[in-house]
Length: 419
Length: 83
Image (cartoon, rainbow over all chains, first blue to last red; front, side, top):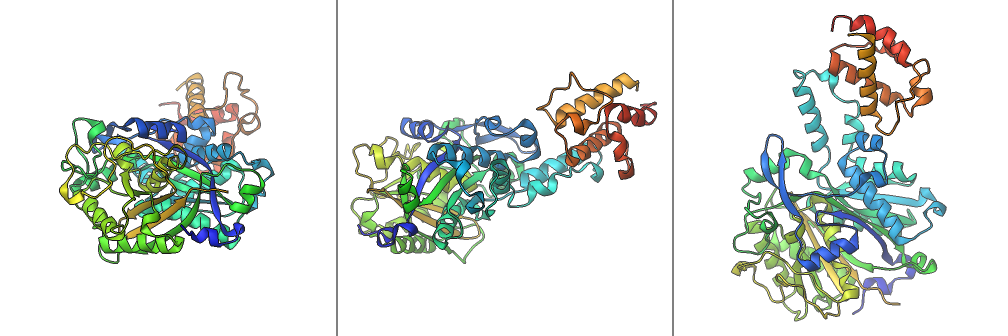
């Protein structure tokens, strides 16, 4: 294995030193990982106005740990998720945050969409008052500017460096991680909070739209509803959640004796340029190949491909087709899927799913894809880890796929860090 | 509405806007902003809530009259007399 990172000087190598997250099946990496190894789903019955009863991945974290109730009320759910995750990541990485130059801290948060929840809330409010626009909240603007979730983090933590959200559909979590790596390498900042968040379950529109596409999961057993690669899959379970990472240059992390979860050794982004909704296996394969080239890795160097697969009929087949093409020469790469546990956390998906796999570097276990009762032959691929964890593996490289609507693909490759 | 009823409604509004504060010891003759953690956005929220609950439109030029509980009650009592 010869990684791009290892060819670079330590100040250009970027490592993950802290992780904060809330997932529908656990808060914090330890609980989340335990849930993934125990086969614990985070999908629950859910009801939202106008749309009615459905299923969703719902997070249960204590927002008041880091926010006043007034700040929670003023801000957004996405902001609360970002603030919680960012604070947990900072605590986890054990940096002396008070002593950091706050103007050299960057906050990059991926979102699939932002503002739908807040706009729907306001329209519902005025609908209760005969559509009197004079009761429209003055907070609507600060809540709906697209930088809002990242901006809330800076207000909460007193960070004066750059912040913004990256709108990249369901590839947003990975996109934000890539942005963080790039900004550290450019020397624009010295410490990064990067990841993805989703408040999507609070907008009825996303449920109605996926339903209209015939792509919203339905199942009498909520825990069985998210079932990528299974023959009986029938669509997406929409989830909320978030994962934020602290990223540092390797030289800085080593100098302060930081715990290192892994090194981001490669990445790639590209565009399908083909359809608003339908994925494109050729472009997905190209994106994985570009990321491998960027990391100077061969397909056989990759131990885990964490798939994006969302349990739509076509999307799962397309991704497996892309993986077959890229990894045909590898006889050691395992394939898994995290959405089978937590549903599709949209802007948080890539960041959460990567987090769920990073412990494989130390525990040697690959979490499975659950809910595969009958594998769709069109999704069959060697070394797909089904239903039970696979232990005893020497995991050194994880490739994380994230693909989004209007044809946006983002692949991140993380390698185990060894001195 | 009686003055006492209006006061209760204002306390309810304040609690909804700023739930981290205690209101049992609120001094009616002291500015809200001097004794509570409040800013201009909170004042806009008070105006918005009054609009929602009592259908009264408060012109911006009258916002300073919502300074303390007493001044607010003095201002609202005639407006809410027949509500």
